[in-house]
Structure formats: C-alpha cells, structure tokens
Image (cartoon, rainbow, N blue to C red; front, side):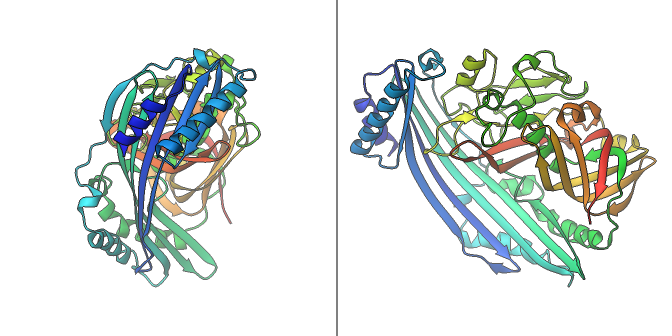
Length: 477
C-alpha cells in the first residue's frame, strides 16, 4: 500500500510551491476483564492520508480515506483550491515557512511484540491480574486492562522528502473500588497515565504484576482513613501526580499557538506572554523542564514531527527561567520565537498543531528519604483523581487518590480525599526538592485534548517526586 500511495503522489503532485502527503495507518486492541468477566475485545483499524498544499503564501488541507489514484487526485485538488483561496487572507506567508526535505526511517524498539503472543494468552494476562484484585468483600468493583496501539506514518513532500516511522504503544491498567456504608474510594494503577512505546516487555518494566495486591491493600486503608486535614503545609507529589501537574500548568500554557490566541474561544488562553521568554522566573532554581521526543520508550518519542521537522532535545525552562515555547515551525515564524518540533496531529484526518510531546522534569539529587526528612509538617500525595484549571492555565486545583501525612521528617497516617490548589505563576517557585534519577518514572497519557475540531493525542511526561513548600491543602467530604 505504501509503495502504491507514494507512486500516486509523485505522479499527481500539482504545480504548486509545496505539497506534502502524510499517510497514517493505525490498529488498536483493548482487552478488559472486569469483575473477572471478559468484556468484548475492542479492535479498530484506521487508515487515510492528509494532503497539504502551499501556494502563493496560502495553505490548504484535504484528507481522504480513499487512497486510490482518483481519491488522492480529488484531495490534491481540494487542498490546492483552499491554498489559493487563503492566499489573500493568511496571517502569515506560508511559503516562507522552512520545510527542509528530510529522508529517513524510525521504528521504536520492541522486545516482545504484541502480535507474537496469541490473543488467548493476552486475555489470560488481564484475567490473571483482575482475579488478584478481589481480596476483600468490601471491594465492589475491580478490573484489569491492556490497550495496544500500532501506528505507521509515511510523510512525503513534493521536493523529495520521505520519512517513515513505526510505533507501538502499550497502556496497562488496574482499578479497584471499595465501599462500606456511604463511603466509596478507589485506587488505580496505569490506564490513564502509564503509556509507553514498546511491546509486552513494558509490563515487566513498570512492575505491572506486583501492583494488584498493593492497590487492593491501599484502597482498604483509604476506606477507613480520616479525611485529609486542611491547612498550609509542605506537599510531596509522587511522579503519578507530577505528570499531570507538569502537563496542565507548564505544558499547556507554553503552547505557542495558545499564547498567540488560537485556542482562546475553545480551550482558553495562557497567562504566559511572548515578552516573558528569556527572563521570566517560572520556578525555583530546581525547576528544569526539557522537551525531548528522542528518549527511547517514552510515549511521545519520534524522529520527525507531522510537518516533517527533525525533533531534538531542548530546554524549555532552565534553573527556573523560561527559555523556549512549545511551538512548531509556523508558530515560530508568527511569533519570531524559537520553538521545538511539535507540530502534531491525532490522525490522518486532522492538520498538525502545536502539541506537547515528551515534556519532562529533569531529576535533582535528593533521595526519597531526604525529601521526606526535609518536611516538618506536610503531606505526600499519589495518583491524580480530579483536576480543574482556569482558562489561562494559571489557577488550579487537584485532587489525589492517596495521601499520607508527614510529621517531623517521618511518614505518618494515611488520609483520604487529599486536595491542593495553587497558581502556576507562583506554585513552581515554591519547589524546594526534586528526586534523583533513580526515582524518576516514565509516564504518559493518551488523552490530551486540544484544537477545533478536537484532537486527542498521546503525550509523555517523565518525573521524579517533587517537594513544594507552603501549599494550600484541603480535604474532601
């Protein structure tokens, strides 16, 4: 199919300034066992192509699932029409955007291919872990899931560019809910925040087979635990909460198209302005954030973004100072700002826009014992449960599944329904401890939404635990 599509594209390319084809083929399989009952296995196959045309400074798109010569010809004609129609109204001259014709291939490393393991054995993996979750009559709901994605992308340009990338992803998940009287609590592992590239070896890498007894024990502890107290205290966040803190209060506000106003009527704007780059103190000296789509195995690793731009590692925030926006080549030209290779689309039927990829908190030097020992009065929170953030990505409130008080440098009693709030512009300046590299965890979510029409995309976040001073903490009801 790839050879045929490439041949059609080369033969049909119109006489325009620039033209590209981005072919995306994707397969999904979701296995879930809930309350020891196998749910219907969900499978999906999807393939199509996006045509982009630049002509006379205008830009046009057209997508099609008809990959025949006739289907591609129609898409090329539509994209050319829209490029010509927008030439007089475009806010930038798209012909001036740099699009070097790159050539190469990338494939993520896979030790145990999903397809090499029979379906029955894959189901048995989920069934086995689901059965281990039901350890007490107070556990009223329990499930285990495995979500596999395989994707292949071919990117062709009219000036000879050709890149091909192959990815496989696995998102394992466990969930357990307990009830007693009017009280209901839950604990989860993965599912929402634990995506990586690779094969079934990921299950061993994340210690998946050790988690069922841990979260079953913790959910029963939470069931009888007191509510989290309210007050100002130090806050130690586990990596499975840090990933979302980074995502919401650093990643989204630093998307360059959002700063330029593109998302204002839909997903909001940003408290960050263009004049902040290079001088604004985003956090304490311990805050070092990198954009790095080159890390093997992280969820949003790739060699080229969906505009064909080569990806590399860049500091976004260094020693607390804001250095660089999350903006692709078009946004960089619009804003006259440096950016990164992060023009990404969720599928073949969407154009690429500025998105996060792997956005990571660089490790510090502290052990977990040192982080806890530095707290006189505080709380350790794990795993996100709920979140809310204003439309400028500034004021926020997060709730977690599990809390444990810290007193005089020691972990104390478990508390349930822990919450905290803050302001992005000041919260990161209270960062006073960052865990070392041994504590860093590679996480990722498949559910980052943005854009009109909406695009839900995969992003990665690696982080160690982090300690913040004097945070507003409160309990639930």
